[in-house]
Structures are given as structure tokens and as C-alpha cells.
Amino acid sequence: MKMKASPVLAALFAAAIGFLVGISFPVDITPKDSPTGKYLLALAEGYGERENVNATVHKFSDSFDVVLFHYDGRATEWDEEFEWSKKVTHVSARKQTKWWFAKRFLHPSVVAPYDYVFVWDEDLGVDNFTAEPYLDVVRRHGQEISQPGLDATKGPAPMYDITVRRNGSEMHKFVEVMAPVFSRDAWRCVWHMIQDPEEQIGVVDMQYVVHRAVPTLQGEGDKEKPGGRFEVRARQFEELEAFNSRFANADKEVANRSSSTLN
Image 1 (cartoon, rainbow, N blue to C red):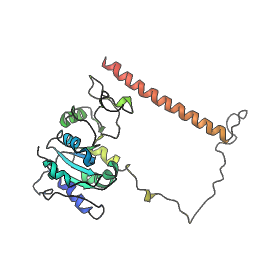
Image 2 (image 1 turned 30 degrees about the horizontal axis):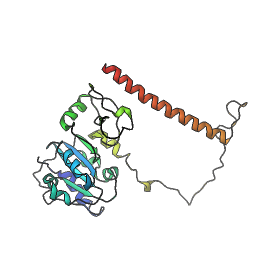
Image 3 (image 1 turned 90 degrees about the horizontal axis):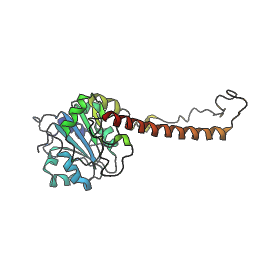
Image 4 (image 1 turned 120 degrees about the horizontal axis):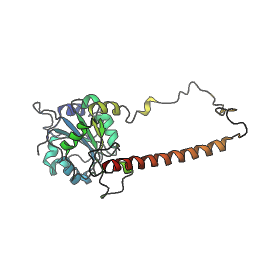
């Protein structure tokens, strides 16, 4: 399988050498005549998951550019084991997360040439997945953010039942963060919400105020049932428990409704 490297991504990563330590570039990553793919697959991975990453990459055609985010600092070993690794983009920074990489290297202006961006984990089983048919369904339903359904018969139990694959259905609506797929426009919105820099918030010590801690809405409501701080706190926990219960019930209701629709 021949994988083409993206000149757009390579240019950005080259400019960021002074920012990150450990960036690895194959010598043939920026041929001028190499076209940019229509889609982008970005994987945050460690060398220990190389076999699964290899299987994942082979599920994506030549229409995809690939970037590997190495959180363990082991970037050069991939070229020795996988031929396709010599033609994809490698970025290495130890002990960093997928979204840390995405925020710094997948700026909307950089990924603008791509119709869809796959920002995936390294540990996904892809035996029953193929990229192009997946995108056919996404386009047919006009989805801006999507993910593949989860096989509940294998692996750990999904955190939300609504993410489980439903037999006989093309799709249903819920997205987690393990295998999201973004359209170009959706990524432009989402990128700005990822890891907003803490340097842009703070406490101004030169000017200060005193919080007098006056109870909000004091004297309002039913005067025959006064409530102190502890009563208010207890009510907060009661309402939180009620919210969690309603959320769980709503999740089950959506799942049941979708199942009944199929029947």
C-alpha cells in the first residue's frame, strides 16, 4: 500500500522544530510533486501498539495522509519495521496526549485541504472497518462529527450504551473521544475548544476585592422553610443525583427508541 505524505503538514512540522523536542522526518517526506490526500488520519500511539497501528493504517487508502503522534519518543523504529512509515509524517513528544498533539499540530489552516480528519486512538480493532464506506454513510446523513459504532461483544464494556453498534442501522447519534471523525468545518470549531491555554486566564494581584459571601436570593421564596448553608449544600447534591438519574434514563430511552424503530 502506498501512502503519500502531506506537504502542508510537513511544512508546519518543520517550522515547529524549535518548539518540540524529538520531531522525526523521513528524508522523502516533502516531494514537491506529492499530492495532498483528500482525508487525514491522525493517530496518537506508542511503539508497543505498532501491530494494531499497522492494521489500522492498512484500512485507509491512498486518499488519506497519515500523521503519527509518538507519545513515547520512539519514532525512528517504525521505518525499520514498516515500509509505509517512511512516507507518513512523524511527530514525537514524550508523555503527551492525543489532544495535546492535535492542538499544536492540527491547526484548522493546516488541515483545511482535507474534507475529513480522523483523530483516533491507537488501540481500536478495525477488522470490520473500512474508511471509504464509512465516509459514504457520513456524507449521506450530512454528519459533521461522527464515529464508528462499538462492538459490544468484544473488548471492555462501553461507557455509554448509546455508542454500541446497532444491527440493521446505518447510524445513530452520539460521539465519544476515542475515534472521532470531523469534517473540515467541524474541526475548525472544535480545535478552538481543545486545551485552551491556561496562560490566557489568571488572577490580577495588583487589584483585589473582598467576597462578602452574602447568600444569593436571601429572603426570597417560602419564608416558612428557611435554609442555611448546609441545607443548600444538601439540596445541591440531591439535584445532582436527580440530574444523573435523568441522564441515565434519557440514554436508555434513546437506545430503546432506536431499537424499536429498527423493529
